[in-house]
Length: 101
Length: 163
Image (cartoon, rainbow over all chains, first blue to last red; front, side, top):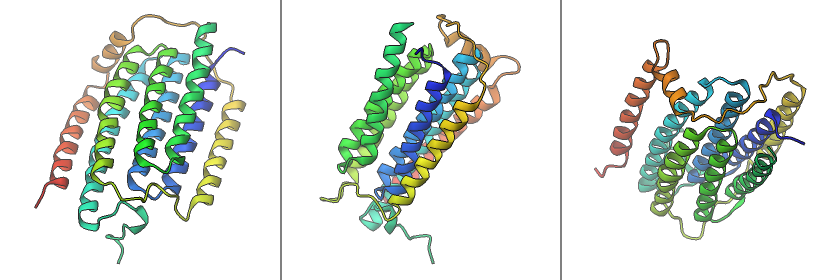
């Protein structure tokens, strides 16, 4: 069976589902951020696959922008986690209640 | 074509296994190393899709920058003997993930995609640059991305600065 567009899309869906599970189920905030990165990579695979099998380059341009946003997101996210760790001495997402009242 | 198919299957299996290891490992540091492996295999998948520029960018940005950043954050926030346990929402999360997966596979399998089978082996760098910087391209988005990166850097510095 030759590999086609469907294979790449299903691989992308599998990776996205794994990332989704990680984001919802994990308690360590750094692992949640890592799962978000897996989800972004999954979306990128789908974009590049559409770009390859549709013969238009815009999908790859979008992937570059997603990479920029992912880098910004991970920098700010990790800075937030380190700031919370300094004041709370924990990275457990279920113990983050600073914005509850 | 046969070689590309074999490469795809190997990369797909390794990337899914690495992603599973990220969410299932109890040790956060090992999870981060598996995340780096996952990023590497995704770069390989870009190569099988003949996206050479993106494969290079993936290795530089994800493996080089984001991987190192995450490992640094783990070292700075290491909790003694806690690891990365699952929360109370484990079963609902599993259910939602599976539901999403089944829906997506159903949609992908039942859609009539119009695909172009012939492979372009030319470098994509020039095509991406032309698409990005041409008259009706993404120049404005490019400038906004630069401003976003600057804002993110300043924000990160302000957040972690000692009082």
